[in-house]
Length: 286
Image 1 (cartoon, helix red, strand yellow):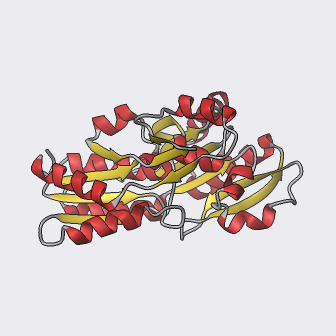
Image 2: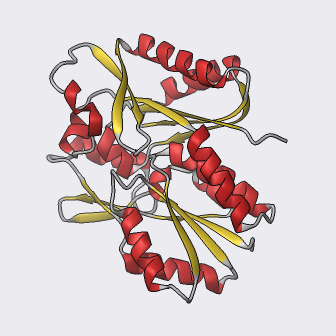
């Protein structure tokens, strides 16, 4: 096992095969439909979640893993040979997951070397960062080298996303700085992003999906130009648009890797079906 072990949570929406390939450990968040509780990505797959969502009479609720679950996970990794653990999680503005990890870290002080980080992001905007750090760890990089790359990626990574409706973000209280848009949109399609603090905000108000996507790609071209990039596209039952976007990105950018993934149950509960997200970061210079 690599010296530095990378942990994230299910809201990073990293495909199972990608997590396994890079030695990433994923702790699931929980989704509640009434009295039923499911583990995101473990006992409830994205397709099953969106099917249940269609039939549900009320919005599902979500909850973070407990500090005890984090403790057990960290201990099991140490027992498997991990010397240092980097635990990278969903924006603290959206969830108590980070706080639960910090409580576990504190209770293990002096016993295990655990480092907990706020990604200030969600979905594959977390995943794209976690995967790059995990690749470095797998090559035998030190904790300091992995931390340095993580900090760089926080600065170098951009995410934009489109939702079919703001209803889910509003009802779940995750709309952040985009709240001013409620009731004013009509046919407007807000191009949403995440602030430096990890809150949802409206980058642009655009009329119609095609114009919103064109604006998103123009903003990314302005930021990344001819630089080598890693790309992540995540979607909530909108595979056709995700694949079209992937083809467009490959034609316009110097893509070093591209991952298309499904938005899982926890993030899906907050953004709703139809959502498509595009994350981009600079590739490490050789």
